[in-house]
Image (cartoon, rainbow, N blue to C red; front, side, top):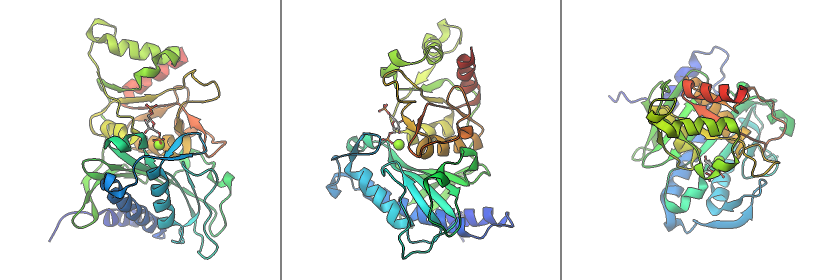
Length: 333
Ligand code: AHM
Ligand code: MG
């Protein structure tokens, strides 16, 4: 008999430890996993789908959408709206709340997602992913905008799926972080990376250096010191990586440590960083903290931010504890 643990089995066993659990969350996670298998299949077929390239439309943030941004969003919505577990959804790709259609029952959870993170990489066949977050809503009612405006500390579950050389789901329900690899032959996510933890110390940083001239002094100082290596105050050499897919950077940090920064910059005074609080920073913050790391804006813990808008942006600095603590200390000075 196989000793492999599937995602479903793992989540059911975790939920059994909680006497108040009804099983709804397990079913919801299964539905998300099913949607992500479809996305994995679609992304994997690449040009054969005839769906690469721009959709010639913009999302609410004014970014040009890829055809696959829209298609993967539709896959998520169609996989989740009928299930009876949700009272509403929000997506990085959709301006307003996505309601549950009249004909379907409404449930107690809210789903928030970025259906295809890193989609600028899709045409060049690099790793992309889906990021999701689950909050508790009002059971049986239609979700309103304010229902979603909960702090990251309120998340019931967060995860992301990587579409890379292998398809993986990384997930937390607040009891540590576990990684599952999709066995394409049997169509199941199999537990391959139990209890992932981020090494406290690191010599690898991740930032888009082309924005250097726009950064705040604290980030300038931190990166300068890394670049000076053994000749500077850090007295060690650093390596640098920038994939431009947050899912890939966070997975790397979960595996071998590191620090990721998408800081606030002065390119556009109205913009507080690039990444979105609800679809990227909060779910990744929950995962990173559960793996022993830190996630901050430089000034405050991401998970403590009171959201004011479902599409708001925030600066994000996350990863190995000692490095994130150093950057946040520079921000206080
Ligand atoms: P997206 O959700 O539209 O793909 O944007 C988010 C992505 C992150 O995955 C990544 O860290 C960042 O944007 C890269 O931005 P840049 O192209 O400015 O380096
Ligand atoms: Mg994204």
